[in-house]
Image (cartoon, rainbow, N blue to C red; front, side, top):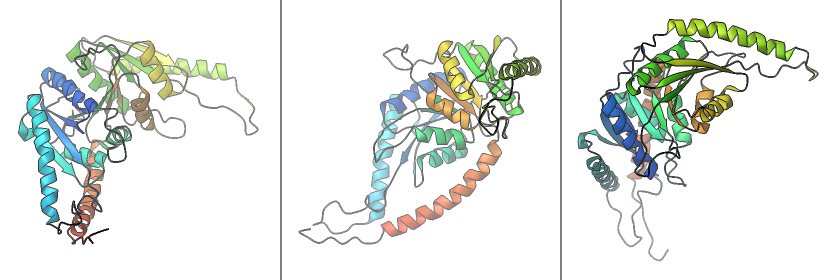
Length: 350
């Protein structure tokens, strides 16, 4: 659906962006993207976010060598990365025109702004890439991309049953957490499009979590079981109305309910029912009583036993935020580059 199609009832995936840090897991995401591209079909773009420490990366390599043009060093480093990226693209049948090297800001910000520029209809990335002080590519980055991306994000998690030749995109059961809001309805319609492409079955899950019900003295004052029963009955009525408003077509579905914490129950349900993919919207009901989707989507991305596809509910707001943040990043990058051009003197023997 992407930046220009969030209101559509079926996913229209034309461009898929795969962030690459040359780790095994990020390269594996290319295989997933290729399988998706064959289903929809779509063009695959691969991108590397080059992180640069301007305080150290542009120093001369030897104290005996005179300072050299630092901008040339910067361009040479980018050229080497692009050559490596082109080699990876050639290996996977991707055009060199679809290779991107970006940098200057945080990884998640660069990924999201490139997705807007392409424009991408889907970002495909693993849960973790390289780790260490210099390479913290995915993990917290994946969660931040989910939070800020203007298009849907598929966070790929490898499963034990996958073959040794690499991840296979087998989708037979799709779990869709719903809170009956318009946002979760958009997530459901996106899921229906996916299910239709893969011949999958949809399971709708609603959590009737009541939270902690105590008096100010810390003692229970309510009939908790009675409240839970009432909440379940109300949820069942809303679910019936919710599914009637959706257009499932030939896609089969079933409904389920839980009474616990939404994020934990979504992940537990996915594991118990051998779910292949969770599709969730980023924002649902908000307020003190209902915070179902949003931070919970990020928790699900972190803990789910399977891949998670997150559909943003307010892409235009995200685009505006990215443009504002991008202007600030460009100013900061220009300042760092200007500082990097200053001559660096070295004293022999130190």
